[in-house]
Image (cartoon, rainbow, N blue to C red; front, side, top):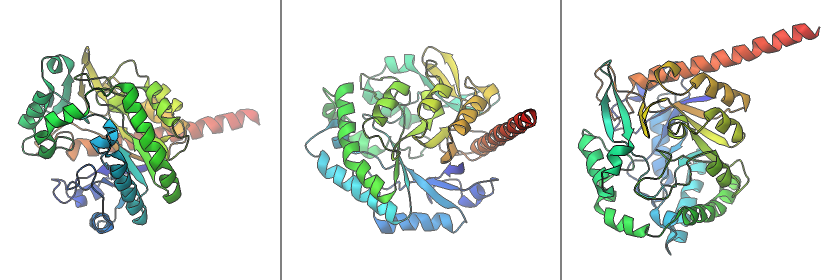
Length: 365
């Protein structure tokens, strides 16, 4: 596995020098924050990002994310133009030796939480989602809620530019059902995956967060059934998944070990985090340890090893701890603890497998 860490560029509160000091770190999953959906990522901009990372002896392991324009997701008459733009970005990333793109195909709300700094008993804070809060809100109020808690950080997916055209976005998706959204994704993938195969760039679609419909907007990446259907659109390893354990795992009906095995060979990127169920469609993002949440992180790591996953894996949203001032979910300290735990699980699984093989070998003699 390639151990990665998400970094938001020169404006991030976490310097790359600190990330480099995390044991076993291979590199960064990065982005260009100045880019809006539909923009072409220019080679000069990508190389500048790469250079800023490589000067700290880290690698740019992939991009998270190259956002999809709403014209593509809603299937408007402009979609071919924006798909052409996206294809050019894919080619430009490949030219810069970047070979993985995480993306999502969600209408308007890429992710949603109702409390960005939920106070835990130990004094740390976590991201929390409560469907009961959402049920009492209008869609536009979600933007107000998120921005009121952002503490001045620019949160991806909640940019002020999108907020200004919120009503127009809602109108764009009027009448878009799950079936239509899936057909629009199919159209997009059939255009881009041949190019990805040509230039060796693997796509990794991110699941819904939370993995159910909100505000009546369709969701098509909620569970294993959804993801297998997407994989079948273009049967290619370049049409893959971001296995986000915290997004899919927020639904108790999603068996994460089953999902890992069901997506064997199609997991191109992993977000590894835990969640704690707190009620009906209510959960918080806990510390990474199995004992701190509702997911069996050892079993998930074991499943990843069993299916031969060797791609990029990173710790996902951590708590805010030790007085750190950082973007919600993206502080240094808890994610550094988290990745060390991931590495420990990985080492334990590998040694367990070696011991098992040795035992079996001894028995067979």
